[in-house]
Length: 297
Ligand SMILES: [Fe+2]
Ligand SMILES: [Fe+2]
Image 1 (tube, rainbow, N blue to C red):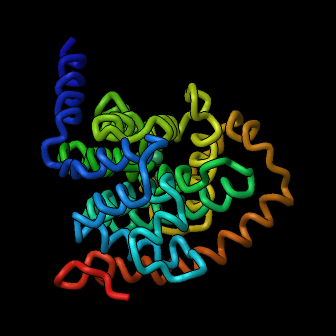
Image 2 (tube, helix red, strand yellow):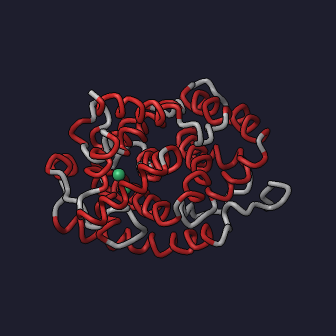
């Protein structure tokens, strides 16, 4: 009984997420606009253009090695025309959550960035209709860890001690201390920010893709990518060992051993480019926008 009361208290604290900044209202507005087929490029460009900082971040992200678009994109309107509403929507979400995560834990951020790279390569190979969305979900899949760290710092420290001392997985330790795990927390948070269901479900099911109802393939892609990136030793997923791949993910992805070889070559190449981007973050490059908030050129 006492345990139940404690868990309920923890759920409440996490649900309220007082210390986490809320996503700017513009994100919700743009998400809705992107979903409306009548929205025009000009309308969307106007809304983004009103927020100079967001516009600058968006252009910086579009032109970064992470996305690696072949041509330089210099205006919001051309970005929308070139990339389409859905990609822009994903970029806005990434740009907004960006600082929140990098401020908290650079190694976890690197893990997330790497996971997003693998997601993007794999989603494209599998012919998924919206690979940018899967990649965005990969980028923010461990958001729940950030929320736990910010809202429940004592419990977070306790979880880290358990992981180290008993060699159990982070999720097991979270279950033991909190009665729930970071995937569930991340799912709530994404939902409370009104992020699209295509992002919410893969986040909440990234450790158990079989539990996803509508976005099972995306959840499986993130699950697989999370493990691959740990195996490659890129960033830090906060576990002492690489967790096992769930059989249902393997069945959903239908990969052959030779596919994995090719995938890894492509991922390593892309990671090499992104590494510079990641170092840039460490040096404050991406957050360090020009003083007037406007991207030139
Ligand atoms: Fe995770
Ligand atoms: Fe992860």
